[in-house]
Image 1 (cartoon, rainbow, N blue to C red):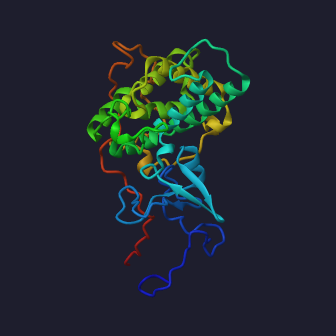
Image 2 (cartoon, rainbow, N blue to C red; image 1 turned 180 degrees about the horizontal axis):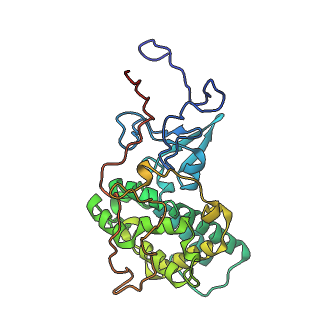
Image 3 (cartoon, one colour; image 1 turned 90 degrees about the vertical axis):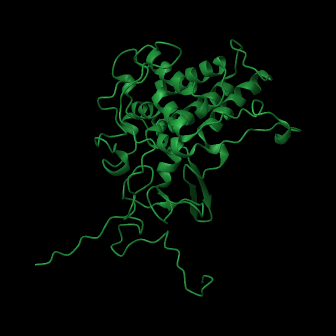
Length: 325
């Protein structure tokens, strides 16, 4: 019963009368865009799905986990959080910070020391972290728009005895940005295009593309401070090397190539300007293929995106109107 005395029924675990479809079959998964399968609401009470007035984002558990979002088991069900409402430990930058901590613990230092030997156990921990980060990056064709619009929930990690109010923004590694500046950054590093290229294993199509071109593309993203924080060159090289190794491993858990999850071929999975798929490079050039003219970013590429546009509708399937004869 609610506050007004009305009976409320939780239908999240119910199946339709036909015994096949879940009650959420009329809603798109906010990640893959498909109507099929059971979906779970974002756990945040204030959540509103893209271009919806009231209902929360609804996601497949498998999609949320693959995209690196927050998924936990509560009782006999799942609790999920969408990109805008995940805990700070789940955002892309935080995952990089966690991987960096693994390496710093090996050195017992606050700086990277290349060339030092490592155990199999430590190498395994780094590789596992790299796989999880790359798996998340493979969905950037989808979440890049959300990041441009809202940023992320990253929070600085404080050491014992540190007080945030006593520290400078530089010490806290705070990088200020706006939707407009993040839009420029996402286009400059070709964040969404890289996600599509990883998803389809486009770096396997020509010999050598999984070496320098891939590492150049990863370096561009890892040099985007608004997304990853103020990384030093040694740190960027460290991440790009390990992420490229994870790609070349061809592990099924990455969800790339023949192991990729199916997504919708309409709605918010295609660009509004020309209906070209966001999840496929199509005629877009491979990120990192061209040598940078200056610094780490390749020459500007004219390619479609939906940054700062009103999201395509995630409304439930409309009922067909009866024809009047």
